[in-house]
Amino acid sequence: MTEENRITFPQDFVWGAATAAYQIEGAWDADGRGESVWDRYAHTPGKVLHGHTGDVACDHYHRWREDVALMRDLGLHAYRFSISWPRLLPDGRGAVNQKGVDFYSRLVDALLEAGIQPFVTLFHWDLPQALQDAGGWCNRATAEAFAEYTNVVGRALGDRVKRWFTLNEPQVVVICGYEHDWHAPGVNDPASGPAVAHHLMLAHGWAASVLRSVAPGSEVGLALDIWPQEPASGSNADARLSQWRDCVSNRRFLDLAFGRGYPAALEAHYRRLGYWPEGADDFVKAGDMEAIGVPLDFLGINHYSRNVVRDQESPDNLPVTVVPGDKTDMGWEVYPNGLYNVLMRIWREYAPRKLYISENGASYSDAPGPDGQIHDARRVDYLRRYFTAAHRAIQDGVPLAGYFVWSLLDNFEWAAGYTQRFGIVWVDYQTQQRIPKDSALWYRQVIADNGFLQK
View 1 (cartoon, rainbow, N blue to C red):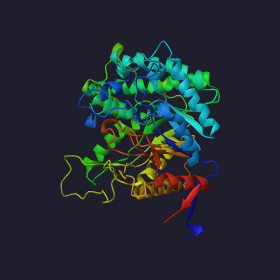
View 2: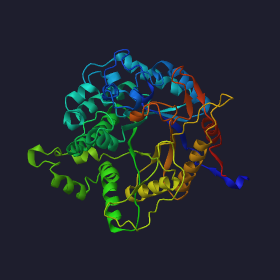
View 3: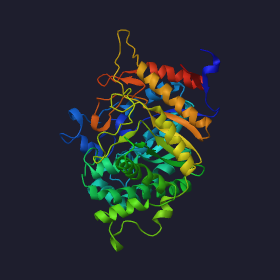
């Protein structure tokens, strides 16, 4: 290989890694932390694989100094992490738990001292259980509580934190947590989805305005998980279904975030089903669309793969367009072109000021070998291919400003418990030993060189 094969990213490109509070912190009932919906869900038999919980997870709450040193050694420019809402406000609103505030303040200070930019996510699914008991995201009051919580965090950290994600993947909360029982809080009521989505996005808009007030100079965005919904064939049935699924899972949140309101087809569909009440009972109030559509400083894209959609009415003799290829341990297709397509689509259709890949990574179960090291060649290859797709998008004009690998550490993977390992750092959950995998060492070199040689 020669330098002609080298891919180089823009000089100010931000290389980072991401985590979420419930997945790594542990200390679930320590120092005044309140119960979250994920505590309740994981402690309910049959909800999480093998009965795993996040009670200890990676014990990051006690081992954060070690983890910051690890990030510094890897040369990370930035670290995206989430705040545990119930650690700061045990009841979701009201009395502030100062020990929780102090924990995140110390973490931010340590990151800055190590030369690492903190990118804070305010909500990564761990709603305080006290708010869920009062209706959760079905209730407009939860969005009001989120604005109050944002005010607490912004005043505590806004002098040092300058980049904020309000929400992480609201679509997953809606579909997995409320319309179905796949994630906490496990409501399993399809009719709840439209109100939940609205209140989440209203919380986003209100929080963005709060941050700009209490933390001047902040950049504010949110992280949406975008999965292309591609038809499995050329049939009209497959095309219609793929367009509908794109509307529900992607376009609904993109349109709202960029001030376009609801897709007409989505609202009409939910009204026909009776999921969208009329008149005084309508969850959409005057001024909501303006609040939700507050301008974004950036958009975070969480992307892993694509969905290939086949309608039951589609003729069986039509060819399926899925290209045979590798799958990760989650069963997700390795399809780097999907990332390129997502970036190009969002840039062309919504013209964001700036984009970040706020999550991308792969689950592979490679364990320490005889030499004690983790030789995760598949993850290295995965990242190389997805980084290449991102670079291609930059070359074609997309204002991509950074890339956060999911995840820094192996961790609690929601309903899959500890059966999936997304980390570039191996975690022994019995001893809490951390071992950087080959992918972490490769990533360290990518960061140092701001690029890499193509194969």
